[in-house]
Image (cartoon, rainbow, N blue to C red; front, side, top):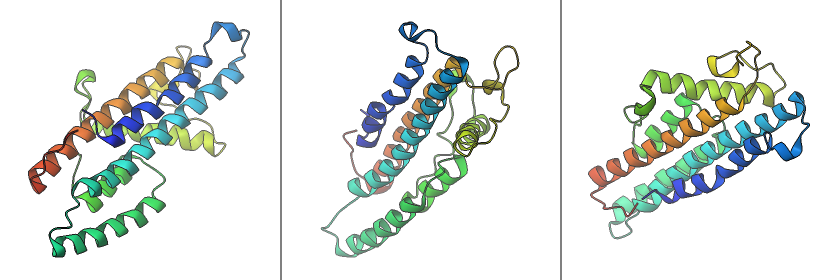
Length: 200
């Protein structure tokens, strides 16, 4: 069962899916390439925002499930650590590979590096790192009015640099996988380190 943070993620990611699908809805034809790109950009931005929200929520969930007021010394340290994490979350706005990993390690102790793989697509840690950072770079580029960087997935078959429905679909699946892997990894970490049995 997914964590509460992942359940929210799976609900919210539908916004990105809807935006991608609307761009290809035959009832809206004719739709220009420019208009289609607007929908695609909004879809990618929604995907990134949903990933960002998941990271924030899983850190908060960590503190919720490790809370134990019966041990006063631990409770005091836990409260201090939780307050520090909340301050960091307020400043967290670029959920790329490095920033997200650092946030998780520093505020939960969980290091996702060995979990962030996509086995069904033969993507190891380095490939996952590259792809997540590429997604963030593309989102950053159009959010700030820059040209989209040329990556293998941002080019059409004709070599035109733009977003495509297929690339967005793959990115949605990629982020869904990373959420599932993070959920599984942090659950195992909490159960091992804290001796808790989680229901998710």
